[in-house]
Image (cartoon, rainbow, N blue to C red; front, side, top):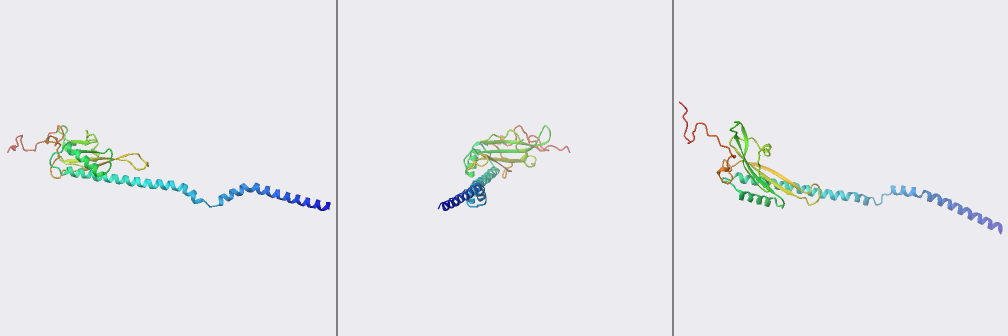
Length: 237
């Protein structure tokens, strides 16, 4: 009896020792196994990818809409500016401040947006400087609505083509303020468009009266072979 109990207790102790040993080995290796299992498993990878991809996708959609709207606004501004230049090129009577105000209102209607818009009309003329006897481009008149007039030709000179002496050119500048719907890129932007046109049905475009038909202080040279009263000068033969 005693021998049997002793054998039973020894077997139980051996079983307990084996269990404890295996449990300790498995518990010690568990963090490494869990890490390997986590790395190898692919469940939930779609959710992780979505967390990174969705913000980029939303930003790309918003940016596409903003850039499309910017190009659309620029196209509208160009068309409106060209229309104003074509209007002035067909005028035969002098224009005034009321005419420019109406042009500004038409520009707002054509662009279809609200904002700090501006319109400026300038007429330039190719003349011969009486002091230097050299050709130069001078401003006949310049007026604007929402923007200051041109006081010097320097800002326009790079945009002007070659002109013949006595020829006039109409320069229309349209400025449109644009604000994007989404805060991507600049908060606001001002599109500046320039359109050039020559007078179509009249040799010159005057401002208010005939005094605004030539550059201030400029006296057109008289044709060779004529006197002050318009009579022909004797050739001396």
